[in-house]
Amino acid sequence: MNVSRQNHKMNSKNPNINIIAILTDDLGYGDCSCYGQKTWKTPNIDRMAAEGIRFTDFYTTSPVCAPARVSFLTGLHSGHMPVRTLKEPFLPDDVPTLPRTLKGAGYTTACIGKYGVGKTEPNVDPIRKGFDYHYGYVLNGHAHNYFPPFLRENGLKIGLRNRPPEGDTRQWETGVGVAETKIDYSPDFIEEQALTFIEDCRDRPFYLHYCPTMPHANNEGGNTPDGMEVDTYGDFEREDWTPNEKGFARMVQRIDITVGRILDKLKELGLAENTLVLFTSDNGPHNEGGHSVTRFDSAGGFQGYKRSLHEGGIRIPFIAWWPGVIQPAVSDHLGYFPDLFPTLCDITDTPCPTVTDGISLKPLLTGNPQEQIQHEYLYFEYRNQWAVRQGQWKYYRDADGSEALYDLERDRHEDHDVQSEHAERFQALKNRVAMEHRSLIAFNSPNEYDPGTILERQADG
Image (tube, rainbow, N blue to C red; front, side, top):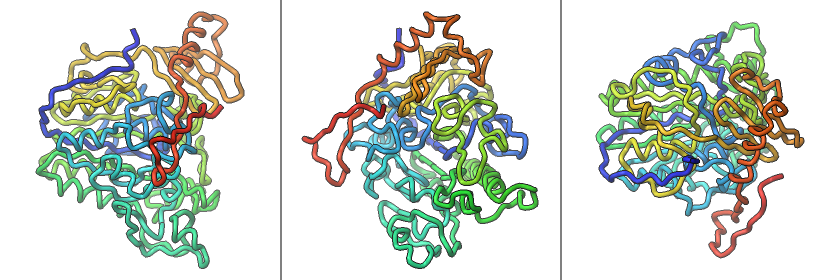
């Protein structure tokens, strides 16, 4: 029986459990030392892993940011979501979301950092989707810029002291580009707002969707040092690396420092044992901004990276930390972003208002692994790529139309196609694509949204 789609009905009692989801941007499976990084250490993320559950086989649903973030918020996989590439305009208002659900259950909700769930969503879109508060970036292009002329707070521009090159009027309007005068480093402001939010909510249940932009590149900076722009190279200043690689390493280190400050703040406020903290990335590592994905083995020995449905593009770090509840462990449980909506509803005893593609991970997180339901398979699509994972097996169709079956237990780098030796299994997994893929529904911009005008089209490819 396929148990991937379930109605999750819980009682409505709210035990006031806080949730913090730390969603990094383009952090690879191999970028943290607890996942094998050898060049630098990430001691605070490692502490989370040592004190919580570190998952080895956890996935995003898409190898790029917007659809991955939509999946996190909706509990849908990439064959069912209304946003599947970087081209779809926005997440429709009538799609149930995790923050709206938790808000309805009495939670104070915030998205701090990069929202980025569509191409043309309005500046107040995080509020429309259920967040009480948003600070940082709404649009993905704006989020490339680490020294922007402004950030956004609940849709309004909050000016910073950074200045674009003279005559760059577009950057004043959109925030996209590279600053000429760099004073205010956006991660400082985003981190401070997150810590302030936690402190302000110490006496009421909260959900913090914390989304640092690191270590995403400033794509407008290209291969110049602006491609991986930081305020300082820190411990990596004297390394014999390009400025871009120093910047990348510093971004990962900076993520780790912020994780430590969040964990310390929870302990300082006496909230640690009443707060579930999740740490993950929206997709696999990038090969942009003058950073080479192979320089530090960011993909952790897997093939592929961002924009690929090979393991390097979709297998991501995922750690769950909850002192006194989660017992330290390493888990090879197969899970992915659609599981988070039902899991967090289950953890907080909040009724899940929709059918999702996920399965609640509460039994696994709370020390009852024998009660944990398993996915029959995980499904992925992106543009002209499709993939299905079932146990050790993975079906993969590349953009050029070539197909393969991989045995990940023996071939984690996906080098050997074994479909001829396992023809029935190959065909069975291939058949899942037709079962899971649905036509993509495209909408007008939400500012012009007319419920009577819905344009149907096939997903790209």
